[in-house]
Length: 361
Image 1 (cartoon, rainbow, N blue to C red):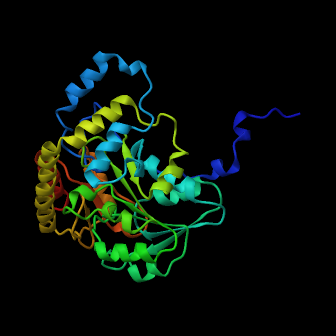
Image 2 (cartoon, rainbow, N blue to C red; image 1 turned 90 degrees about the horizontal axis):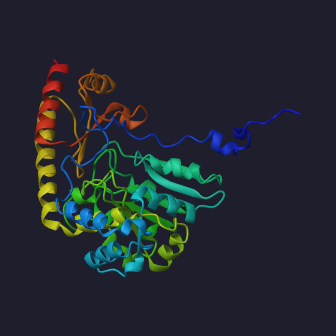
Image 3 (tube, one colour; image 1 turned 90 degrees about the vertical axis):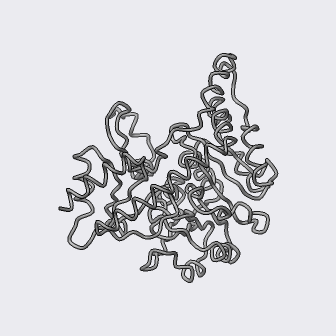
């Protein structure tokens, strides 16, 4: 009898599964200008230091965290005038997305999404391992959603990033709501970058009018807490209550909860950092356009840059990497003709512009 290796017992679906591939993460000590994963270039709220110190000195880290992340849940609910139980705080918004997909999808179900959008959605559809189908609706030539084609689709879940990624484009709110109203399944508005748009663009305020709408948010981008892993999902009360049944018992730690609440409530500092990002986004867009890049209007903390004809986007990515500047390059579909560049500090952006000027001759 042939002895089996433990890996021989792994499900075939796991062996064949292609996981999500995040942007390159250099070592913490590496001297790299990192403009490839849309982190905020500015530090988080300075009030966090004292909040963390209080947690550590009080000795409460020996205890389990609050199961519901109640303090953070209540703070979010207060801002949006929601029932706190409509909010599920998660280990990053990726956990929120995963819980949603696992709660909804059954064998043969269909997920509908514009293409391109956040590339984690097709991965999650496959990860459920129930034979769910992922249907992609290509963007229009101007990189906007094809609302006419999307409105004709049927499925269990329709999902999109709002503003979209990797294009950075913000769609008209009224068109999005019309799409939500007409879709017979659940609609996900993934708002990782919504804080870099104008106020009032989030669909959270519309959940009361559209019970099939759910919204996810993250603290990674606008609150400078990508290393923390805190996010949340908002929706109709019963829907969120059912999704909550799937979460880990203690999915967000005490430090994570405390830091997130502190950052959420420090609105003055949040506004200062947001303004800096928007100013640098405008400056970088202008300078890169002057270097021949075609850039759609961005409502995010990154810009989607198409070099002039004859210039290889992948070549730009590789040459910048040689200079210890990381930007994001996607090798398939529409994004293969672009590089995506996160907004850095003024000094980082100056260095990027200097190196690009040399690369482009």
